[in-house]
Length: 473
Ligand code: ATP
Ligand code: MG
Image (cartoon, rainbow, N blue to C red; front, side, top):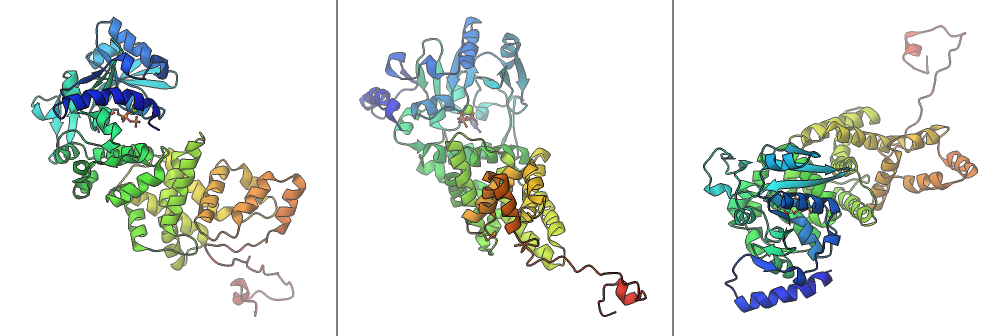
């Protein structure tokens, strides 16, 4: 994994050992001593950097793109930082827009690619002007005090995120010892961990995300306060946590991330009801909650590794399904039929989840469809199978069944039946339909038989009993 990084780090380490512990920052690694070439960088990011440079501003790439390159992962996006103010950047690019209130920055758009350009920020602690504001819990609500590159480095989150690539001479500047931490595979927060987590509790989630993605350890001081401060996540707006959940669980390292989130007591602030259910050890023949979630995340990780797409609604449908089933049983025990019970369960679970993370309607509608199809896919007789197959959410619902089956749920081999049906010839498809019971056992509500239809017997006078279905009448 560290191959391209190795030769480069050796040179840097020689430098570090020479200086021993009093390294003076930044450590500057010349172009000839590192492997990050312009060929590895998005051409659009290069365009942005050159336009800034030609207008007399400084321009650096920063953050994940450099970190990921050094450990041989492909960067997700390219973030640019400059000494130009957001307004100045906006003026330079007609294809840009100013965004954010908490952090004002500029998005420069090239088709589907967005290059995020931010201005060097000063450390908010030393700032008393109204460009920076804090909540009563010490959380930064607004941070628009601009500064120089040293100050900018200090207010970033982890040491490996403070590596800057200078477009001036293609050197890399390491401001906080990120290179050494990459070498030692450490996630290390910059500054006093407690203060930094209080300023922005989402940094605790980011620490976990990077540990899982990079397969690094959390350095002792970085992990120290997390359990005690986890409750601060309660103060983060649900919309921001929704975005974080997608990055945490939907970026290809979901299994490991989930395990760390549970270990550090953070998962319950993201999915409180799921967390409580898992901890209660509730399970039935329909589901073993944690096995189901782990299987779902494993499949998602695998899809991402194979370059396939994954949908946020699928992820959310997975995470909330155990509690939907739990509520479903409750509603059915109160006498509701299976389908309305499922709809009520879905609404209740989604409503409760909204207190933790937002779920936009474009996500909740397909989630409900996937759940709904879990009750409909067993009913395959006649023309139904053909119609169900056309449902826009069929494929997702089918994948969902596979997750249920692989995690030990009893679905009556529904997954293999639908697999065969999708792959079969016309004749095989007809045979498959003929092979199914017209009135299948509904795994969620027990055997279901169509009620006997009463025949009207014209020789029998209608009586109050016959109208209520009493056959003895
Ligand atoms: P990736 O894009 O792969 O998820 P990244 O490190 O680029 O990782 P971004 O969310 O794109 O993460 O943020 C870009 C940079 O902004 C980070 O590298 C970090 O330096 C800084 N940053 C982001 N979020 C925070 C935060 N909550 N506190 C401090 N610095 C942050
Ligand atoms: Mg990034």
